[in-house]
Length: 310
Image (cartoon, rainbow, N blue to C red):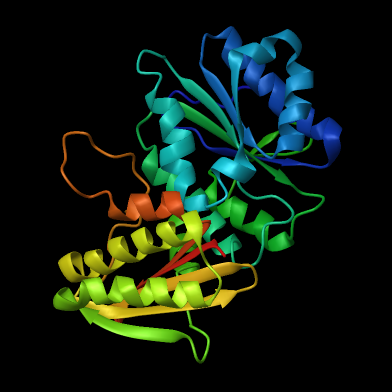
């Protein structure tokens, strides 16, 4: 099953599979083909899928990098810089790189899904012009119809159960716009308006509120860093001021920052750091620390919402 084309260096097919046999048939030959061609290969998927591929590859599994997507990709916003780009960028002499990435699986929550599908759309911009093939499996027997429909918009082609490749209604920009959803904070969420001169007070407020909600230890330190980065970004790059809100949601602590600025770069925070460029790592750090990051930007400003362990 060849998925590379001569006219476009970056190739991004979706694989629609039903059941174990179709999953193995769609992934193992893809990896073997790449290994036979001398292409470095990686798989980022849930643990049960990784085991299926390991068994299918046999001894050749030692030639493949395996990544637990439920951990490395817990926050979809860190998959591009910390999984896909990290592996591809580490192969500078390779003619082509092959990656299987499965960021959407049964069990992803409704609050996570918009970030997942936006991630799939942004892969295309992140790898334009790169000699990389990223195959994204979708469990057509378990996932909601909306997930399969969205996959047709975020991938130029789809490979069906028979191994046939078909063109899709490819429109990643529309997906990014569609899931740029307003984020409404719950009534009664603790709020703190801030500006440059009150940034230390804002961090103190966040820590105090988090402690009152039962957060401690590493999680408390991570939340303080997230709040510091987001509020500083609002002062420096936004409208110079903003509002912090914080509350508990199930077993997680949620903090969000709203300001009057407009986030125009959809890949902000999703690129690996440039070692020659000072600064510019704030939102990237936020993605690394948070379990989930949701963003809404529009004429009235930008809201960045982060979910961290409680």
